[in-house]
Length: 115
Image (cartoon, rainbow, N blue to C red):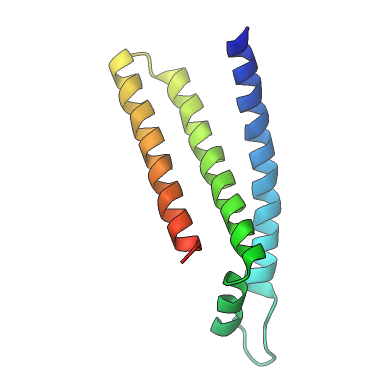
């Protein structure tokens, strides 16, 4: 019975992370690409971007966005792996690869965001 609850939570978090990604992409594109333009300049100024990235709100937003993206993508790959890989040795290999890659991306992402 406990295993079925785990599956429900993974399913629910997959949907919640998808909604967080949708909201995050919308916010990211608006604020990072379409706001802060100076008349006569098509691109956002470097100083504007640096100022935004130093704001604790944007750091928290970027961290939540990063973790949602990594969870959503790697949880999807985890599900595909469980569904299609039948060999126990290959399953262990791919699970290790998925977990290792996700952990590495989280560490590098947090490092870059908090520079």
